[in-house]
Length: 106
Image 1: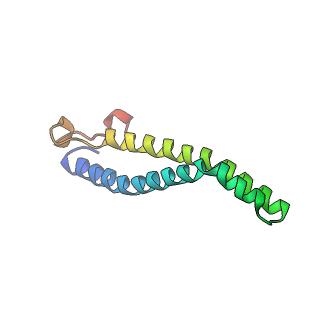
Image 2: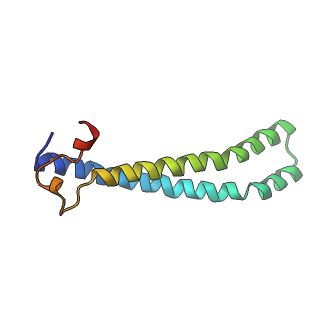
């Protein structure tokens, strides 16, 4: 897989993947902001008239928000970094003749 057509295909795929990754990142950062409000939300839950099992389940969900959002943010940024490495620049030798995937053993 080399040549201008291959590079163009890789560039298109990389570009097409960046948009959903940015959407995931924005939503993960929003989830992180919600997770940072967990102490206040816990206080609200403590005063709510809920079944104790419901309260425990909701508190457990709150406790999981921050690690989940951190994992999503880390993974998304890592994927974005990998995609940036795959996308050839206009002035790179890869842009016209060599597959940008060559350094990854493909």
